[in-house]
Image (cartoon, rainbow, N blue to C red; front, side):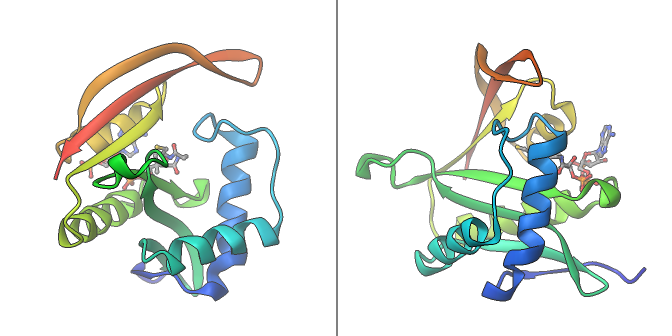
Length: 165
Ligand SMILES: CC(C)(COP(=O)(O)OP(=O)(O)OC[C@H]1O[C@@H](n2cnc3c(N)ncnc32)[C@H](O)[C@@H]1OP(=O)(O)O)[C@@H](O)C(=O)NCCC(=O)NCCS
C-alpha cells in the first residue's frame, strides 16, 4: 500500500464518497440516518459544497478515496456564518492509520485560512475515538444532549464540541 495523498475533492470522487457515506450509515452511530443514499445524492452534496467554496478534502490510497473531511454551515441563518460544523469519515478498513488526523488537521488549516471564527463538532457520545481526535486538536466539550437520537434500537446522546479558531 502506498502512502495516502490528502487533496481537494473533485466531482469524480462522488462514487467513492458514496461508499464511505453508506458504510457509515450501515455500520456506525456517527450518522443518525438509517437509509443509504444513491450516487445522485452524494454528487449533489459534493457539488453543493464545492460550488459554495466549502472545502471537501479526501484521503486517497492506491487511487481510491478512503476518507474525507469537510465543513459546512452549522445552522442556516446568516448570523451563524462565522461558525462551521466539521465532519470526518474514514472507511473501516483504513482506520487507525492516521488518516482522520491528517484530514482534520488540513481541514482546520483551511478554516483558519478562510477566517472562520468557531468550528463545532456534534459527535455521538459513545464515539470516544472521534471525541479524542477533536479534543487533541483543541476542541472542548461545551454541551451534552442526552437521548436526542435513536438508531440500532437504542437512544443516542450528542456531545457538542467547539474550537476557537
Ligand atoms: C473517527 C474516525 C474518523 C477516525 O478515523 P481514523 O483514520 O481511524 O483515525 P486516526 O487513525 O487518524 O486516529 C485519530 C486519533 O485517534 C486515535 N485512535 C485511533 N484509533 C483509536 C482507538 N481505537 N482507540 C483510541 N484512540 C484511537 C489515534 O491515535 C489518533 O490520535 P491523534 O488525535 O493523537 O492523532 C473513524 O473511526 C471513522 O470514520 N469512524 C466512523 C465515522 C465517525 O465516527 N466519524 C466522526 C463523526 S464526528
